[in-house]
Amino acid sequence: MFKFNRLELNYRNKLIITFVLVVFLPSIVMHYITYMNSTQTMTTKINDLVTHHLIQTNKHLNATLSMYEDTLYQLMLNEEVVHSTKKMLYGSDFEQLVYSDTLQRTFEGYTNSKAGIRGFTFFDKNGNILLSYDKDTDMTWNPEREGTPFLLIMKLNGMQEGPLITAAEKLKTDSKDAQYGFHIARKLFGISSGRLERMGYIVMTLDESVLANAISNTSAASSPNGIDSTIYLIDANNIIVSSPDKSKIGARFDDLLDDTTMRFSDSSLPEAAVILGQASVINHYPNEKTGWTIVNVTSEKKMFAELYAMQKLNIWTGSVVFLFSTLLIIYFSGLLTRSIHTIVNAMKQTERGNLNVKVEERTGDEISIIAASYNKMMATINELMEETKCAVQKQKESEIRSLEAQINPHFLYNTLDSINWMAIEKDEHDISRMLKGLALILRYSISHSNKMVPLAKELEWLEHYLYLQKHRFNDSFQYYVHLKPELNEAKLYKLLLQPFVENSLVHGFAGMKTGAELHIRFYITEIQRLCIEIEDNGCGMDEASVSSMQNGSLDPDKSDAAGSGIGVRNVMDRLHLYYGEAAECRIMSQKGCGTKVTLLLPIQFDNPKEAVMDNENRNRGG
Image 1: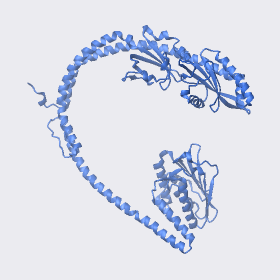
Image 2: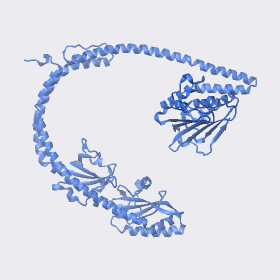
Image 3: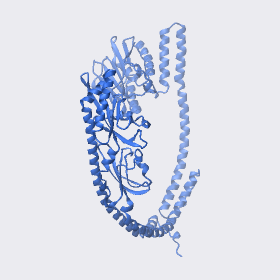
Image 4: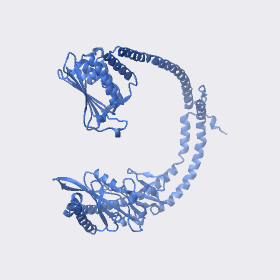
């Protein structure tokens, strides 16, 4: 017997043998294509008929809703309604009682003007019900959905104009039978104090039967060739607004679907599904007026009755051919995977920690190349692991050196503290204050330099810095901090302001003995960003210097000894690192006219609700 497992074939030849065997399956493919073409042709014809019907149904729905919208609009233009609502809002108690009765009679008249209208409700602009009329009950609002009026008012406020149409919901009635209705609402405007003012909202409540009649008006066309079909109306959240089975109103349309493997269209509705235990085809059409969708569900049972018989025959034939082909593929796939199993076993040993495993290269095909690559990869991994061990050791040594380097700043801080006490003992309080400020500046600078802090804490540090600078420059300048109290807890990164302040003191006020002023302002812009302005009346800069500072391209060799040029460039880099495109830095300056730096940062609070609102600025002068 010829043994295929000893025949050394390359991977390409093995694949060719497998594909040649699979060619015996075209008969199944041919039957499948024939069935699919027949199904598609019939489905297309029925879809065309149903789509035409859905278009007509959509037009009728729009016409019906427009008719009731016009009724609501006419009611709101009624002079008695305008006058009565104004008296109910601003009149005396007696006038409110009288005009409440007048408005109720008007509501009653309009309720009886068209079939399907249940009543009207008048809300004030705060969403409180001032008057509600319903011809069947005193309350149309479902107590199980107490938030319904509030949500309705919120949606109305979010609309620019036009009416708001809500989905159907279960109404509270005295009847034992469940009743469903929906609402059409509009904002009510009137003239108050000589100007147009929103007086409140008027909501018209209608029976759900209005929607049911609108979408079933041409129901005969929805059943072409005697095929059963049902029409649903669902909202954007797949909630059923109208249904032949009233108990389904308010439920999710998805809950009617029993099929777990469905094809979906662009509108996220299944084109084919099992609905309530029955295989169905779904057609849908969007209603632009309401945002709802008209859904037509057609039973597949009668649609594809003849095709099902052919499908069964094709399934039995295809199953036999598929079984035979599967056995052949399994046999030959065993030949293909034998070499692969060797590599897989080697990988499993590697997972268990054996990094010295090697794969034997015996097959002579492409699998041998994979095995050789695997062996080479393992050798490389072993080398990299040795390099990693060395790198970890070097990192530990670097951390130790970094820890040692931190000793010097802390030693300097402790030394300054000792000198401070010596100055206090000698009653040198000015020197003591300067030493204390310098120590605080040092500690603040070396502790978590990339940490975010409250604005108040950053300004406290800046106060110490400016105090030392005033002594350094013999009180040749004055500084002012303009800050609203509610911004005290605003968060920003440490040491973002110091380089700009130092730039003003060292360069802007160079040569000025008196009259130098520095203003630092903090406020929130209209687009909810924290704005920081650092403005001086110093000597200013030319356009080239402004451009270099704005672009962070200052030449380090030309910066002063204090490194303010490098500091400004460092701030530019930090702003980009911390905030990305959300931060912005603007520099405006002119020779002899001072310099103004504006920083725009995202506003951040730890707890914004606890921020104290105060409109007075806090001015602190040196």
